Image (cartoon, rainbow, N blue to C red; front, side, top):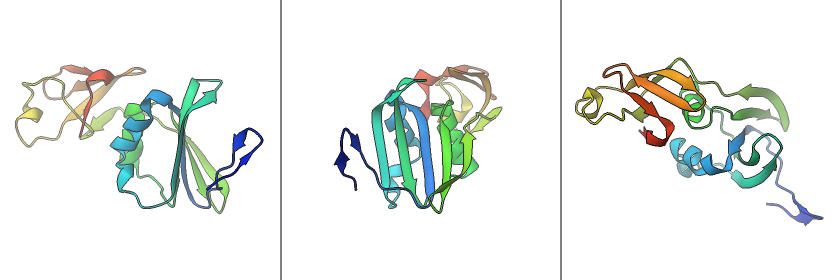
Length: 154
């Protein structure tokens, strides 16, 4: 995979795929979990607690032959609204994308309110984004607000 040269680890270049960058280190495993990356059989590299001028400490994920759909990008945005995606094709960055939260979130997390209809019947949770950083969502059914520390991801 890589060799140590001097003080840096050399990681194989990505021919085609996606790099998720600017992930706060504490959020790395949440991103892996919400995207179900443990089920992907492509080559994947991730690093955490890497130096970052912007974040202090960051994590990064490189996934070979994986390009995310909008629904997956929304999942990334709810956990790490400051993340950046680099789309790689033929060893070149062909697109840089800053993840952005949509105005409405559908089916990614459950409502925090235990009495909400979405927690008792087959109703897909829908939220309006109230704040983007830190993320807070208002349920479109019961109107309760769910904040990041109470997200129960679906």
